[in-house]
Length: 240
Image 1 (cartoon, rainbow, N blue to C red):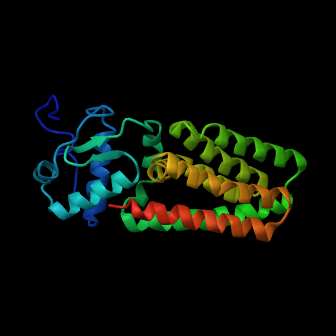
Image 2: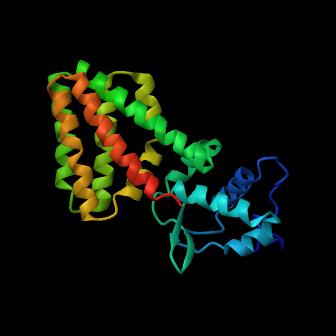
Protein backbone atom coordinates (compact mmCIF):
# COMPACT_ATOMS: atom_id res chain seq x y z
CA UNK A 1 0.00 0.00 0.00
CA UNK A 2 3.05 2.27 0.40
CA UNK A 3 3.77 4.34 -2.69
CA UNK A 4 7.18 4.60 -4.35
CA UNK A 5 7.82 8.07 -2.91
CA UNK A 6 7.33 6.87 0.65
CA UNK A 7 3.75 8.07 1.11
CA UNK A 8 0.45 6.35 0.48
CA UNK A 9 -2.25 6.97 -2.07
CA UNK A 10 -4.71 7.48 0.77
CA UNK A 11 -2.45 9.65 2.91
CA UNK A 12 -1.76 12.11 0.10
CA UNK A 13 -5.44 12.93 -0.39
CA UNK A 14 -6.94 16.14 0.95
CA UNK A 15 -9.64 15.49 3.56
CA UNK A 16 -10.38 19.07 4.46
CA UNK A 17 -13.87 19.29 2.98
CA UNK A 18 -16.83 19.58 5.35
CA UNK A 19 -18.66 16.32 4.49
CA UNK A 20 -16.14 14.00 6.07
CA UNK A 21 -17.78 10.61 5.44
CA UNK A 22 -18.33 11.44 1.75
CA UNK A 23 -14.79 12.79 1.48
CA UNK A 24 -13.40 9.62 3.02
CA UNK A 25 -15.48 7.55 0.59
CA UNK A 26 -14.13 9.58 -2.32
CA UNK A 27 -10.60 9.13 -1.01
CA UNK A 28 -11.08 5.38 -0.77
CA UNK A 29 -12.56 5.40 -4.26
CA UNK A 30 -9.53 7.26 -5.60
CA UNK A 31 -7.29 4.70 -3.96
CA UNK A 32 -9.24 1.80 -5.47
CA UNK A 33 -8.89 3.41 -8.91
CA UNK A 34 -5.19 4.17 -8.45
CA UNK A 35 -4.01 0.74 -9.57
CA UNK A 36 -2.28 -0.05 -6.27
CA UNK A 37 -4.86 -2.73 -5.56
CA UNK A 38 -5.95 -5.45 -7.92
CA UNK A 39 -9.43 -7.05 -8.00
CA UNK A 40 -9.56 -9.61 -5.23
CA UNK A 41 -6.95 -7.88 -3.03
CA UNK A 42 -7.71 -7.35 0.62
CA UNK A 43 -7.91 -3.70 1.67
CA UNK A 44 -6.41 -2.42 4.94
CA UNK A 45 -8.40 -2.94 8.12
CA UNK A 46 -10.82 -0.33 9.40
CA UNK A 47 -8.36 0.54 12.17
CA UNK A 48 -5.50 0.95 9.69
CA UNK A 49 -7.61 3.18 7.45
CA UNK A 50 -8.52 5.32 10.45
CA UNK A 51 -4.83 5.84 11.22
CA UNK A 52 -3.85 6.44 7.60
CA UNK A 53 -6.58 9.01 6.99
CA UNK A 54 -6.45 10.66 10.38
CA UNK A 55 -10.24 10.64 10.69
CA UNK A 56 -12.73 9.09 13.07
CA UNK A 57 -13.62 5.44 12.83
CA UNK A 58 -17.27 6.30 12.24
CA UNK A 59 -16.43 8.22 9.05
CA UNK A 60 -14.34 5.32 7.77
CA UNK A 61 -17.12 2.86 8.58
CA UNK A 62 -19.72 4.91 6.71
CA UNK A 63 -17.39 5.21 3.71
CA UNK A 64 -16.86 1.46 3.65
CA UNK A 65 -20.61 0.89 3.84
CA UNK A 66 -21.18 3.19 0.87
CA UNK A 67 -18.55 1.52 -1.30
CA UNK A 68 -19.80 -1.92 -0.30
CA UNK A 69 -23.34 -0.97 -1.24
CA UNK A 70 -22.09 0.23 -4.61
CA UNK A 71 -20.51 -3.15 -5.19
CA UNK A 72 -16.87 -2.09 -5.19
CA UNK A 73 -16.01 -3.88 -1.96
CA UNK A 74 -16.83 -7.38 -0.80
CA UNK A 75 -17.09 -8.11 2.91
CA UNK A 76 -16.08 -11.63 3.86
CA UNK A 77 -17.24 -12.35 7.38
CA UNK A 78 -14.29 -13.13 9.63
CA UNK A 79 -11.78 -12.53 6.84
CA UNK A 80 -11.84 -8.83 6.00
CA UNK A 81 -12.91 -6.58 3.13
CA UNK A 82 -11.74 -7.11 -0.44
CA UNK A 83 -11.81 -5.20 -3.69
CA UNK A 84 -14.50 -6.88 -5.76
CA UNK A 85 -13.29 -9.26 -8.47
CA UNK A 86 -16.37 -8.65 -10.59
CA UNK A 87 -17.84 -5.64 -12.34
CA UNK A 88 -14.44 -4.03 -13.06
CA UNK A 89 -16.18 -2.04 -15.80
CA UNK A 90 -18.31 -0.50 -13.05
CA UNK A 91 -15.50 1.65 -11.66
CA UNK A 92 -15.71 4.54 -14.18
CA UNK A 93 -19.49 4.61 -13.76
CA UNK A 94 -19.15 4.88 -10.01
CA UNK A 95 -16.99 7.97 -10.47
CA UNK A 96 -19.89 9.55 -12.37
CA UNK A 97 -22.19 8.66 -9.50
CA UNK A 98 -19.73 9.79 -6.83
CA UNK A 99 -22.20 12.39 -5.56
CA UNK A 100 -24.45 9.52 -4.58
CA UNK A 101 -21.97 8.16 -2.05
CA UNK A 102 -23.74 7.66 1.27
CA UNK A 103 -26.44 5.21 2.24
CA UNK A 104 -29.29 7.74 2.27
CA UNK A 105 -28.54 8.89 -1.27
CA UNK A 106 -28.30 5.31 -2.49
CA UNK A 107 -31.73 4.57 -1.04
CA UNK A 108 -33.07 7.68 -2.75
CA UNK A 109 -31.64 6.40 -6.01
CA UNK A 110 -33.26 2.99 -5.48
CA UNK A 111 -36.58 4.74 -4.83
CA UNK A 112 -36.23 6.82 -7.98
CA UNK A 113 -35.42 3.71 -10.01
CA UNK A 114 -38.62 2.10 -8.70
CA UNK A 115 -40.78 5.00 -9.87
CA UNK A 116 -39.01 5.16 -13.25
CA UNK A 117 -39.48 1.45 -13.91
CA UNK A 118 -43.19 1.61 -13.04
CA UNK A 119 -43.71 4.53 -15.44
CA UNK A 120 -41.74 2.82 -18.19
CA UNK A 121 -43.84 -0.35 -17.85
CA UNK A 122 -47.07 1.59 -18.31
CA UNK A 123 -45.71 3.42 -21.35
CA UNK A 124 -44.38 0.21 -22.87
CA UNK A 125 -47.81 -1.42 -22.57
CA UNK A 126 -49.46 1.56 -24.27
CA UNK A 127 -46.95 1.88 -27.10
CA UNK A 128 -45.66 -1.61 -27.84
CA UNK A 129 -45.79 -3.10 -31.33
CA UNK A 130 -45.86 -6.76 -32.30
CA UNK A 131 -42.11 -6.61 -32.91
CA UNK A 132 -41.63 -5.10 -29.47
CA UNK A 133 -43.59 -7.92 -27.86
CA UNK A 134 -41.36 -10.46 -29.59
CA UNK A 135 -38.23 -8.64 -28.42
CA UNK A 136 -39.45 -8.64 -24.84
CA UNK A 137 -40.51 -12.29 -25.12
CA UNK A 138 -37.00 -13.13 -26.31
CA UNK A 139 -35.50 -11.26 -23.35
CA UNK A 140 -37.76 -13.20 -20.98
CA UNK A 141 -36.81 -16.51 -22.61
CA UNK A 142 -33.15 -15.61 -22.16
CA UNK A 143 -33.77 -15.18 -18.43
CA UNK A 144 -35.53 -18.53 -18.24
CA UNK A 145 -32.79 -20.29 -20.23
CA UNK A 146 -30.08 -18.88 -17.96
CA UNK A 147 -31.78 -19.59 -14.64
CA UNK A 148 -29.17 -22.23 -13.76
CA UNK A 149 -26.27 -19.79 -14.25
CA UNK A 150 -26.49 -16.94 -11.74
CA UNK A 151 -24.14 -14.52 -13.50
CA UNK A 152 -25.72 -15.12 -16.91
CA UNK A 153 -29.17 -14.76 -15.37
CA UNK A 154 -28.28 -11.40 -13.83
CA UNK A 155 -27.15 -10.09 -17.23
CA UNK A 156 -30.38 -11.35 -18.82
CA UNK A 157 -32.43 -9.74 -16.04
CA UNK A 158 -30.82 -6.34 -16.58
CA UNK A 159 -31.30 -6.73 -20.35
CA UNK A 160 -35.05 -7.42 -19.89
CA UNK A 161 -35.46 -4.10 -18.12
CA UNK A 162 -33.44 -2.24 -20.75
CA UNK A 163 -35.54 -3.73 -23.58
CA UNK A 164 -38.69 -2.73 -21.73
CA UNK A 165 -37.33 0.81 -21.33
CA UNK A 166 -36.64 1.00 -25.07
CA UNK A 167 -40.16 -0.16 -25.87
CA UNK A 168 -41.56 2.71 -23.80
CA UNK A 169 -40.20 5.16 -26.41
CA UNK A 170 -39.53 7.69 -23.70
CA UNK A 171 -35.92 8.57 -24.36
CA UNK A 172 -35.50 10.61 -21.18
CA UNK A 173 -36.63 7.95 -18.71
CA UNK A 174 -34.96 5.17 -20.71
CA UNK A 175 -31.77 7.23 -20.72
CA UNK A 176 -31.86 7.65 -16.94
CA UNK A 177 -32.27 3.91 -16.47
CA UNK A 178 -29.48 3.26 -18.95
CA UNK A 179 -27.14 5.61 -17.09
CA UNK A 180 -27.43 3.52 -13.93
CA UNK A 181 -27.30 0.17 -15.72
CA UNK A 182 -24.09 -0.79 -13.91
CA UNK A 183 -25.73 -0.08 -10.57
CA UNK A 184 -28.75 -2.17 -11.58
CA UNK A 185 -26.36 -5.05 -12.17
CA UNK A 186 -24.76 -4.57 -8.75
CA UNK A 187 -28.12 -4.38 -6.98
CA UNK A 188 -29.39 -7.48 -8.77
CA UNK A 189 -26.22 -9.30 -7.79
CA UNK A 190 -26.84 -8.40 -4.15
CA UNK A 191 -30.38 -9.84 -4.08
CA UNK A 192 -29.97 -12.80 -6.45
CA UNK A 193 -27.65 -14.97 -4.40
CA UNK A 194 -28.79 -18.57 -4.95
CA UNK A 195 -31.16 -20.75 -6.97
CA UNK A 196 -34.12 -19.95 -4.74
CA UNK A 197 -33.65 -16.19 -5.23
CA UNK A 198 -33.27 -16.73 -8.97
CA UNK A 199 -36.62 -18.53 -9.02
CA UNK A 200 -38.24 -15.78 -6.96
CA UNK A 201 -36.83 -13.08 -9.24
CA UNK A 202 -37.81 -14.91 -12.41
CA UNK A 203 -41.40 -15.36 -11.22
CA UNK A 204 -41.87 -11.58 -11.02
CA UNK A 205 -41.20 -10.96 -14.72
CA UNK A 206 -43.88 -12.96 -16.65
CA UNK A 207 -46.75 -10.84 -15.24
CA UNK A 208 -44.97 -7.69 -16.45
CA UNK A 209 -44.45 -9.22 -19.87
CA UNK A 210 -48.07 -10.44 -20.11
CA UNK A 211 -49.49 -7.01 -19.27
CA UNK A 212 -47.30 -5.34 -21.91
CA UNK A 213 -48.15 -8.02 -24.46
CA UNK A 214 -51.85 -7.44 -23.78
CA UNK A 215 -51.48 -3.67 -24.07
CA UNK A 216 -52.76 -3.07 -20.53
CA UNK A 217 -50.92 -0.09 -18.97
CA UNK A 218 -52.65 -0.36 -15.59
CA UNK A 219 -51.81 -4.04 -15.26
CA UNK A 220 -48.24 -3.38 -16.40
CA UNK A 221 -47.76 -0.68 -13.77
CA UNK A 222 -49.27 -2.94 -11.10
CA UNK A 223 -47.03 -5.87 -12.05
CA UNK A 224 -43.93 -3.70 -12.09
CA UNK A 225 -44.91 -2.12 -8.75
CA UNK A 226 -45.07 -5.58 -7.20
CA UNK A 227 -41.73 -6.49 -8.78
CA UNK A 228 -40.01 -3.31 -7.60
CA UNK A 229 -41.41 -3.54 -4.08
CA UNK A 230 -40.12 -7.10 -3.72
CA UNK A 231 -36.73 -6.23 -5.22
CA UNK A 232 -36.35 -3.12 -3.06
CA UNK A 233 -37.27 -5.03 0.09
CA UNK A 234 -34.65 -7.67 -0.67
CA UNK A 235 -32.04 -4.99 -1.37
CA UNK A 236 -32.76 -3.19 1.90
CA UNK A 237 -32.13 -6.44 3.78
CA UNK A 238 -28.62 -6.55 2.37
CA UNK A 239 -27.71 -3.06 3.59
CA UNK A 240 -24.90 -2.96 6.15
